[in-house]
Image 1 (cartoon, rainbow, N blue to C red):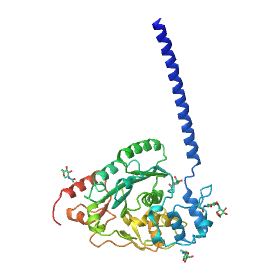
Image 2 (image 1 turned 135 degrees about the vertical axis):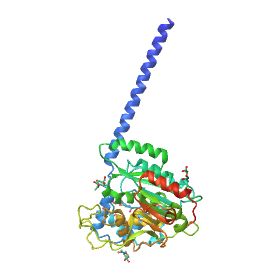
Image 3 (image 1 turned 90 degrees about the horizontal axis):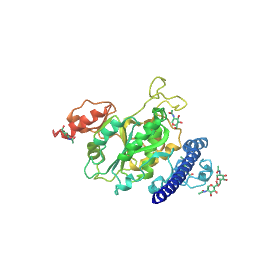
Image 4 (image 1 turned 30 degrees about the horizontal axis):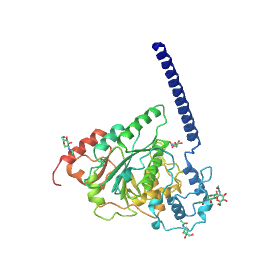
Length: 380
Ligand SMILES: *[C@@H]1O[C@H](CO)[C@@H](O)[C@H](O)[C@H]1NC(C)=O
Ligand SMILES: *[C@@H]1O[C@H](CO)[C@@H](O)[C@H](O)[C@H]1NC(C)=O
Ligand SMILES: *[C@@H]1O[C@H](CO)[C@@H](O)[C@H](O)[C@H]1NC(C)=O
Ligand SMILES: *[C@@H]1O[C@H](CO)[C@@H](O)[C@H](O)[C@H]1NC(C)=O
Ligand SMILES: *[C@@H]1O[C@H](CO)[C@@H](O)[C@H](O)[C@H]1NC(C)=O
């Protein structure tokens, strides 16, 4: 008897369990369907549309535009395009009067990985934000950089924030790479990624993402350094000798290895080839080599917004130079004894105490030279 009763109860329980499983499954399936619907209906490149419309209108007034984007008030119509006519009715505003905290515009592409709270967590605004361009497979380079020059505790009592910038890999291994990246991001919280194809020709979009992130989530940072994952950076020298936390942070400050009177390369086989349709003038305005440049925090937003109003070029450093020129600003040379090298300098203790960047290192070399440098007490 009891046995039979038990059996019946077990079967009832089993049936009930089965029903809950089915409900769960249906719920999950509808979530997935909703996600697919959302992804399908979010337009990935509003920026392109905005930019085109602005170009068509020959971009009458940058300051008005900057003011509007600052305030996060872009009036987007249903298809995501900016309503220019409403902007034209606004009075121009001096960019110096703008309240940085109001900027809450979306990026050019949706963020797939973001760290919106990284700055607030630090309480006091960071002194320096590193924006480091990298690709999904460069895991070792990121690991080396975390341990060395972009270690967030590298300079005692100076708040440093590190972010690696990535687009999305859309090749065969794309989804696998994405999973690995997500896992890495959850461990280190130092990765941001937007939904654009990660390619050499899209480096400008990567830089734009970094500048957008600073403008939106970390606008009080004193300085920003954009650099690459094959670089050696003397963070101590950069912070102590060039930027100097004891001074009031500079405004409209941009420095690095300045490249002047560079002519656009017309040779299609060159990596830096730029077609006439993309840039037609005989020379570029002065710009800083993308291997490493430093800007004051206020410039992140200014450069970002002004570059929404221009025909962008795919060479990210040239593009930033063009934006600076449009803002009426010029890069400033660092003091002659503090050098941003955009090639590789053979390691020597004293040389490395005074340079700010050196270019072209494998991950294990970054670690090796960093250790040599930190452990060497030679007076130079
Ligand atoms: C923007 O508009 C103001 C006032 O209409 C004008 O003084 C200024 O020159 C304009 N700026 C540009 C870049 O056209
Ligand atoms: C945005 O544009 C719509 C018409 O497209 C208008 O009704 C609305 O008032 C505008 N909003 C702002 C904040 O300008
Ligand atoms: C832009 O705004 C104006 C005035 O508010 C309105 O007449 C026009 O329809 C809007 N255009 C779009 C594309 O929303
Ligand atoms: C840049 O990214 C966009 C968005 O993913 C993509 O459509 C485009 O093909 C990419 N361009 C290049 C040259 O890789
Ligand atoms: C100094 O060298 C030792 C041994 O090579 C190493 O373990 C240590 O991490 C180095 N110190 C720094 C700050 O890199």
